[in-house]
Image 1 (cartoon, chains in turn green, orange):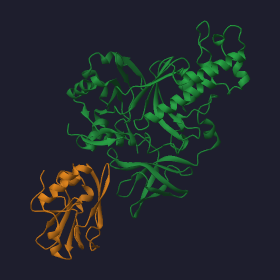
Image 2 (cartoon, chains in turn purple, yellow; image 1 turned 180 degrees about the horizontal axis):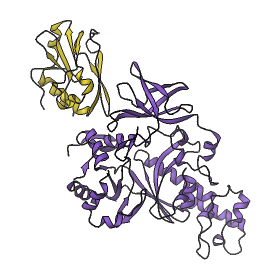
Image 3 (cartoon, helix red, strand yellow; image 1 turned 135 degrees about the vertical axis):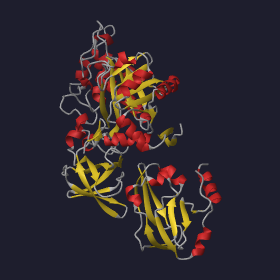
Length: 409
Length: 129
């Protein structure tokens, strides 16, 4: 296809096939497709998965009640730093699907497994079946139990003969320690054998329907941020462009055929370059640039994804509550000639900040950026950005910059 | 697109054209524009600025990256192509017509040290490994 390839975390990825700007406009005005198979699908299955995710993720999976519904969330360290951002899909009561970033996937999975083992140890009641097979009650709303309390909550299914609860608890905890290395209570399995193709743009629907017979019936009522399983395919109405469209997961062996079917219907292949300018215009964070383990979601424009209101505990919650953010993420539009880029210094009336993502916006035909600045900075403020040896004028704006085919600034 | 035989080249991907009035025009090569992709901004040096050979003196920015442009020889800037301010994409569509700035070399003999088209192509090929 004449794609310009780069190495991206060990993957050979297409940056652009032709003109990156043309690909960008193609998605805003019509439809384009992206091979995003580098992203990793992780399935978590087992009893207690909802309780575990309620604790693992900063957003609250209790918002997910309809099978197929998706939720965007950060996964945090104890100190509130962002390990990764992800989308979690509710499949069944004992199966959630998570899609994580490529560069962080191995780290994410190791973290999930470690936390799952610790959560199982601390909250065995989340993972146990009652004798009658009924669901155990939700456990993570409660405060962490004292050991003597925990013992009382060990379900009868764990009790053997005339053993006391204390003896049973000792046995169970010991047993879990032994077993956790081999057979954890939750199955956390990644699926590198799945490819992901994103079809994005106002015409994504009609092009998908034309390329995939039968898909119209399955997806025409699909709500935004929802997914449906179709045989070996998983079709989600999600994306990273600010346009309508789908992200389709399917076995890699079938991906070339699917890709070519879409191409036959006139869906233009687009590279990671256009994907980056599209997501920036849409005001969507990029992990590793706009946030990482050194910052928390509240200073990354992601407060809307953190549920601090419910009583549930989650990893990082205490740190977020204890440390109100001193900085925030804002949008910038460059008024002088030039191009805003990551790491350029931003000078404001309230102190210095830094651009986290910057580029040229093809929709607005000017340079835009996300920047982390002191929290006192307000929309409409005039700031200066150091670019090489110059100080250039920029204005603080509310983002997104563009979505649904239109500039918003 | 092959590199025109009537131009001289640098290892940092500038092309140099000798003009009838003794000045030289400088732009970036086909290979360079292809690597950078869609151009969105060009910054040229001030007319009258004195440059040393290999000094950073201009910038081209595409959607994905910024790149410095270097003076091919020592000399003084005599003119800049203001049309690129409004149409930086001209560098993509016709890199060998889209000159960025002109210089009067301090020493015309310095030009003979620059590469010819074949030598430059060898540099490009070696970068593509």
